Amino acid sequence: MNVGAILIGMLPEHLLLGGVVTLMLAEIAGRREAGFAIALGAVLAALAAAGWMALTGFAGTPFPGHLSVDALAVTGKLLVLGLAFPVLLVSRDDFRDTRYYALLLSSLYGASLIPAAESFTTLFLAIELLSLPVYVLVMIGMQRPGGTEAALKYLVLGSTATAMLLMGISLLYGVTGSMAITAFADGLSGGQPLALAGAALVVLALLLKSAIVPFHAWAPDAYEAACVPVTAHMASIVKSGALLAALTVIGTTTLPASLLMLIATLALASMAWGNLAAIGQAGFRRLFAYSSIAHAGYLWFAFLGAGEGRSEAIVYYLIAYALMGLVAFSALPRGTDDAREDRLAALQGLFHRQPLAAVLLAAAMLSLAGLPPLPGFVAKFLVFQNVLAAGHVALAVLGLLASYLGLYVYLRVVQALFMAESPADASARPRALAWLALTLTALPAGWLMFFPGSVLGLL
Image (cartoon, rainbow, N blue to C red; front, side, top):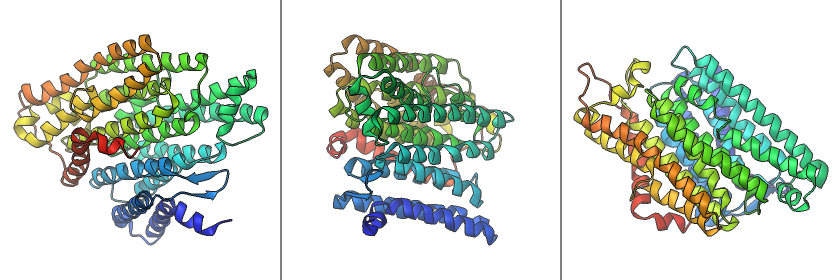
């Protein structure tokens, strides 16, 4: 066992784990109000460690056959840790005790492990570490009477995905005799029925974790019932973790036509249904939930492209999508009546009350719609470019048509921000630390808009 490789290669995870232990000790000592400061310190330290690994080009294998760190793994760690910082800032006014922050760091620990997984054992543990705390976060952060029901739905569907993943891994192990991630590609290349069934179950489990149609039922209820910080965590870090898991498993593997058609069908259905269902929503978080379903479709659509371009398209899309999502959540006006302030009607005339917040929220919406020159346009361009390069012209056309359905959804929000009268009793506004989170997400989003090549060159 290489102790040095374990200490350095897993340094971000060690620092997050140290934060969790410190939070537990603070809880025992009765210092619950220190939760935010401890969690913020742990995330910043872990982010600095991941940044050092990226700058030095660190590569290592802490646990051979189970966990290895390369450039793509470090990029994945930087992504989820970077997203966690604004999520913590948005959380400060809603949560002051240690429980929330311990759960958030535990979920972040799992997300950080996912891109470095080399075996299905490690990947399974990482996915569960990511998911299990979120079930509790939805409950302790619920702002609506239906929070318990939403958390239960999330738990049931998450358990279903876990069972499907384990069954698929079992079938692949039975055929290949290996728990390595490469067993997925080996099973597909062998062509044996059991291996193909196992690979299909693994893909379906990851589709469910991504909230793809028809496995999306938990997302709108959970997003709506949870408070803004928990919804922001699910929309950015949990979504990124699920897609990084899919990228870890599938990678550059050449998929058979039947599996490609399954992914294409469900991805197109998600794009179309997510955008159509979002049109009739009256609440912002529920609208964003359906939007995230549509964006999960775009992300899975990238797997139709050639293997070499998948990681670039997916990671860039995750960066652009998660950043603009966090910009939107940070810019939301917040008060004491969550149900009222979550309604789109509460955003009416925001430009006249908070011009900067309205402009940034509108930019986030237009970026999610994929309009140039915003980051979302480049992200979608990369996805459809890869799909077209792989020869799937008809599927690319259908995907583009489905993406047009989302224009009305996002323009509807923009119309409310700028062209509607402000309610007479409107007093909610973005909170103090939310402005800092807004700045920390808007600046890199602006960099993506003006210098996308500088980021693509690192992927």
